[in-house]
Image 1 (cartoon, rainbow, N blue to C red):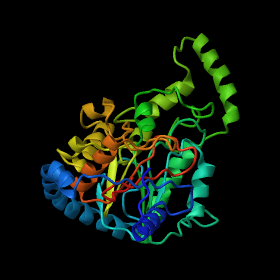
Image 2 (cartoon, rainbow, N blue to C red):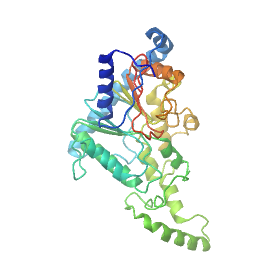
Image 3 (cartoon, rainbow, N blue to C red):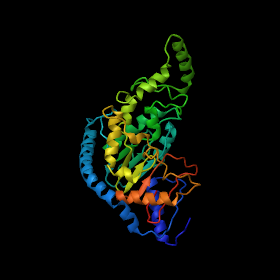
Image 4 (cartoon, helix red, strand yellow):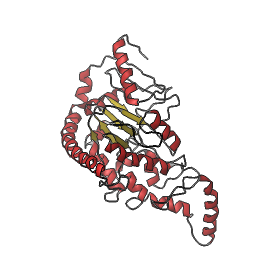
Length: 359
């Protein structure tokens, strides 16, 4: 770690990080100083940045028009309800006054509520009171905890309330969402198999798991090879037809709010070659059953699997990845990248590169 004496810059960096994260958590700011001039980053990313800006100009115009129509309709309660697989994904948003980033929830609705209350985005009744705040849930709602459906329904209901108030709730796709679509249920909690029979079915208490096991064993003896509770969850997450998969189709891989980029894992320069909105569209259409599975989903560098910028607090970001961060953000005309994915035992782990890009 190299400490610099420019106190003003340090104060600005810390205040920006505080504003981005929205509420007080333990943060670590690493300031790195090197010999690479700004031109090094600019030259490496110039081609990608030019293509990115050309594409985003059109995408932003189209996305802004769609968002305005949705916001206007939300007041009259005629917009498509979020979570039904009817709302198109959007990638680019204008600068926001306040951004609250919430990391991996993993079925813990109590923790989600605590974060929303701590950041003064919901009131005591759970309704939106955040005004024009933009809340970004960075992905991984699913697995581990037993309140996955509660988390999903809360966030998607808040989408409508926030839009009506001039704010926004963004829910991103994480690797655990993709795993469930693949019927990889290795990380599902004991109570997580229950309550997926239909969209309208209320989630039952985790204590019902054992009774479901016994009933499933009984049904197995009657000739059914797959337990009912596994069938329900698998059906719900079936691409193109499952109600949960259709909900996931409205969750983008990555979004950019002004100069802030949010993604579950990380980004590579090559992800920008074809345009981020195209990546979001390809994944969304796949989940809706109208397009083939994007090869990127199975790549370890995919935005939902990438760990280049999410180093644990006890292992600082490598110089190679710090340079990569500069290239990506420079190409996108952004100042900071917010990611989740990797557990941060000590709280929010922050990094500021030698060119003052934040990750």
